[in-house]
Image (cartoon, rainbow, N blue to C red; front, top):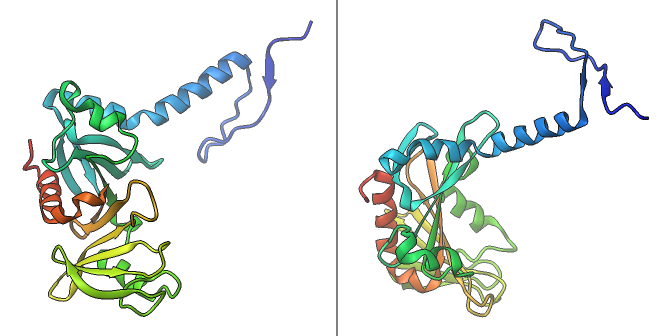
Length: 243
């Protein structure tokens, strides 16, 4: 009969001490250990949020910026292997910026397969994202895809819409761009699908919360006219002014 135990005689080095380990392991024990490692690694963020349940808020830090977000707006985040939070995912319902309430709006949050009323917000550490002025400068230089400045692919800036510079292309595959500037500096960038491109067109907004944290937010294009209210509510949420 085959021996159910596997004899591992590999040499393991721990730090600079050169510790030798020779031990027998059951395949079942090895598998169980591996599963435990994956489970623990994948649940670090959930454990952190569970620890904040008593206050009904998610307390976290991204790149030296501290946040305190009501749990009803929280979707969780992603960590690096070093346990450093790089992203945080938030959400709400438009137009009134409602937080999740299982008894009141579960359907709109979880059961609508397209965007519907949902706005999804991602906070991202700066080293993973360019600033809005940097992004606009780079996009304007892309000869094949740019719709800024009217220089490539039929791009045209020929009007203001909703208080935003509106750039569009004669090519349907190119999303439209809406840009908000202050004193000539790009502050908020929106890339929006056209109705001819997808059944449920949406917009992705880019905004710099501060020098350390970038913000991406995704919502249905029908709410674009309310972009000022949307950005104002995101700022209130990140500032800790929404309950």
